[in-house]
Amino acid sequence: MDREKISRLAHTDHPVNSPLDDESVRRLLQRTLNRGDERILDLGCGEAAWLLRALTAHPNVTAEGVDSSAQVLAKAREEAAGLGVGQRLVLHQRNATDFTSPRPFDAVLSVGATHAFGGLLPTLDAAHSHLAPGGRVLVGDAYWECEPSAAAREMLGEYEDLATTMDRVVAHGWTPVFGHISTRQELDDFEWCYTGSLATWALDHPEDPDSAEVLAAAATHRSQWLHGYRDSFGFLTLVLGRTPE
Image (tube, rainbow, N blue to C red; front, side):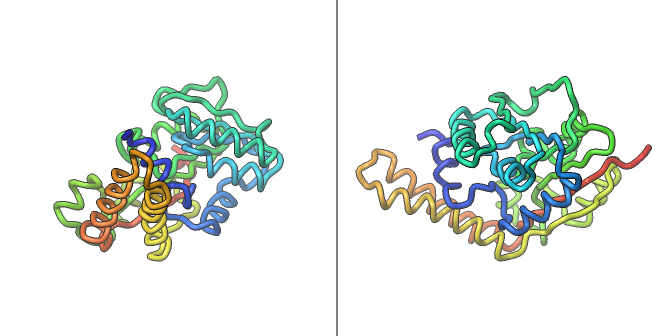
């Protein structure tokens, strides 16, 4: 079965595709949208969970989201219509790396999608290309809380520790104005929701031809998490302004 279906099922109970609870999302958006009338962009928006929260909290905000998946964008449009914010949301089906706009944005978001650009710093470069002067970037990415195993590095990629990650961001021309380090509860809740949503669907649909594969995917992910990276994986979300040159 395709990976997109696995991903869609896995995020049923945790629509924000990052280890952040609702209060953390609210606080990060509040620090990013300090006027309340911003024009915002989410690169790799998925089901547009961040944008929908911003639009419902701020009636004068307008938003655009970019994602390559037609299915998740269709779900986002449906939810936006149900929330009454569809008129203020524009969604683009394309690779985030290919997106262009004739106008800059007051805020650019990319949380949990840095892989699309090849890492944190290239993501910040992409965000900067869409950012209006004085705007804010909200970005989230992984870091290593302690030295990972070789298997964890191979599985998840090359990250740095927290201090080195921050040093690299600052050296790249950005000033942090707010940040959030995901708690152990947020990290574990995200993984339990991921594996639990898959397992629940498989157990509730035993007649589906994909059921066994989905259940196996839940078991594999749970094993990789518990035996591979749980003790070393961390997640950092930053609100950044561009450092004056």
